[in-house]
Length: 408
Image (cartoon, rainbow, N blue to C red; front, side, top):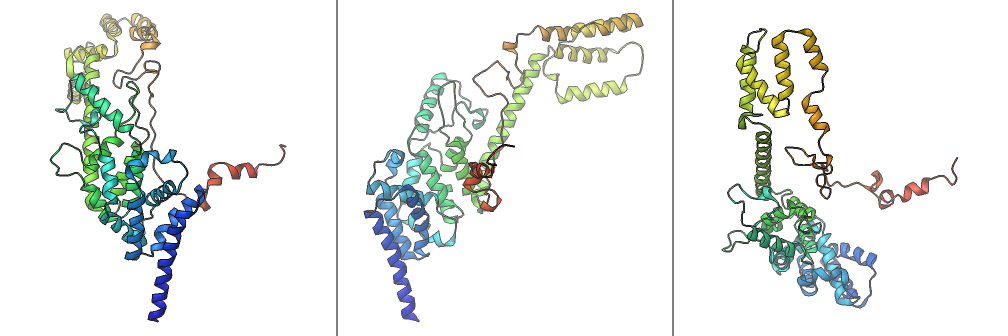
């Protein structure tokens, strides 16, 4: 029995070695290379020796600095080997068979190399066009400093290979506690001002394209978000860190929205900050409840009415309505009701080019190059082939095949 186990172990070693040697001498097509990339981790059978051997190939053939040139590689053994191992890391499944391979990639320094490549030349401050990433005291007023920071982010987003680096780290840390803790603690406690990985990824996921300055994120925002989601999956320690960073930004966004709303309401009213506030609303409701019914309005009622009139541009309408009640003439009141209010005439005369919301500052034609009220909720889900998740279902092949040969 012992001899049989030894023979089986030798066969396992031989299988991995045979596949790795064939990669040197065989010109692989892209589909076959992807199949081998997904198969390689399972050929280690979870054993330490084979995992160490496979990890050594990662360190030997994957040049991290050349990640950005993978799309333009010339055909050759070295480029094929690098592409194969990068795809292996990206698609590494979160199963126990691959745990030893992940540990060996940590031991031989491959993970650290990818991490350093991602953190290299990263800006030390968030993008200046993302105010929610700054606290109220950190807002920058120096235009030159803002311009320099924009250029830093432009250069960082344009760095080739960032997307591959994030994908590799995402595949390696999937449901692996040791890898998740290593990445979550990277960059913390350093003497320099460089952000840690969690903070940098959060800055990236919270930053959109800046069309006015011609800066694009090259779609790495969703990749950074996916990496953070994988880092906190099935790990309470890293989940607390990620949630804390995101919570701080959400609270800051809510604070900014309240400030913009308050500023817009103040601008629409001649009576200051009380207009639209909760205190003013409660005061108005209390006054209305204690106001006895009479023919003439009380002074407080007149003041609250004046506030609302100034707020909505109804001052002329309110004045004429008050005079009509004072005169106690049903005929005059009916005529005033039929007349077109001043606010309606003002809105009809408004130039459509300058029409914009007073709170969010959006308009249909005000900023034609910006998106107007377009929001989407995205959630990644896995759909099995039996439920319509096959490629033929998605690209419409099955639908075309199912069409009748001739129209009725």
